[in-house]
Image 1 (cartoon, rainbow, N blue to C red):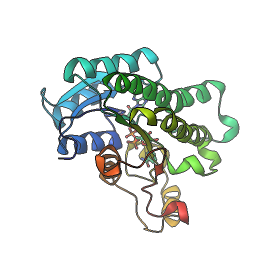
Image 2 (cartoon, protein in one colour):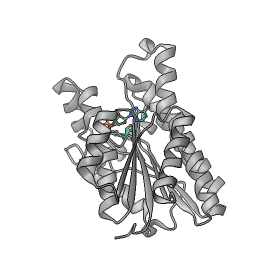
Image 3 (tube, rainbow, N blue to C red):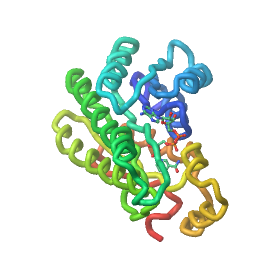
Image 4 (spheres, helix red, strand yellow):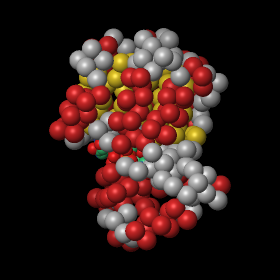
Length: 249
Ligand code: NAD
């Protein structure tokens, strides 16, 4: 029970990795606040994974500062504090570079990059006020360091997110707040089912994955839980890649 007595916020919590991370946080003893734009899946997730004593669900769009601030305020209102912030909400449109409209560019950057920035700011403000440190984790991607033109906006946003992680780590280290990233390879969730409708695309991914299989959301959640715990007490500014070896191929 490494997270006993702590409160964790998870954005994008109705989906695969966010949901798995929330389940893992609960198993490690934390109270969990779930945020997502998809109200019906959010409420179903909250009901499925916990009780009123352990879980709070808040509809929140991470690209809106008012929603992020309300999410943090709701966590403090219900559980009295915020110790862990998992900026996990993300979208990944697949399209040719030249097909990316200004609207799509702005939308992806707003959700993936601005969302992580605003979530980091809001959580850090609360953690500094509490005066007992904390951990902020940004859900990056292996694509943060790959040049895949079919997911250009996604890759751009995740590359920027790694800079949110490293700059915030330096800014908040004096307050005992660690800021880390997790950069999964290809994990079997809805975002991937949406991105790869053709078997050929999936086979190409698997061919570039030394372990020869997709990852499971729980295999990302275990890295998240490690970083959130005191077992990672000397790690900050770092993004860790659960990717079946893809980054080194
Ligand atoms: P998913 O689509 O299953 O879940 C994403 C969740 O984010 C959904 O519940 C969705 O409703 C929510 N969301 C979307 N826009 C939002 C917004 N504006 N505000 C709040 N919530 C919003 O996908 P997933 O695979 O679980 O992805 C979670 C994170 O992991 C994403 O940041 C994604 O980029 C990252 N990631 C996933 C993979 C993968 O292979 N699945 C690999 C690398 C990184």
